[in-house]
Image (cartoon, rainbow, N blue to C red):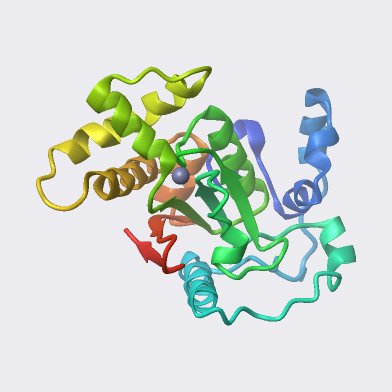
Length: 246
Ligand SMILES: [Zn+2]
């Protein structure tokens, strides 16, 4: 039985998590994954993982990092430092679901170093199956204690969804699939009489994705219900550089 999500199919213990943290997961054939997961039990007295911190502590790091970024006072970084260790393992403190917008770069926005954030990006920061699978990897196997859905001001994807709702605008390629996922947030925001429709739809979209994640079985829902992780929403303001919790 898995210690995190309760699923008997992917029971994980310390050393097995370490194995996957090292990136070996991708190189394994499905038949080998079971064998890899059945590796040795954790060594007694082994040091806790670097990201074995509470969700609140992880959120504090992001909040403080964003304050540094917004004040244009980021930490000085030597990117070569720790590179060899990072090649062996990763210990992200947060998994971030962000928009693909070129102006929103979570590592910069939260002033975090390589290896600190497990970032998934898609226009409109929506949850789909591939992103959910990525997130499951980030929290289950890599041990990130915090999940954040990060929307942003002036989001083009949400704005496009508003145009589709209002004018029935036709979009090319696969964009309609993306818009379909954002549309429900626009419909809710349209009923809000106060504020700006785009801002309201951006906020509502973040709230909806957070709610969707909290109810995404088996891995995310179980970890959240068991208080192993927290899932929060936030919006990044392009003009000020500040991130506001929802
Ligand atoms: Zn966007």
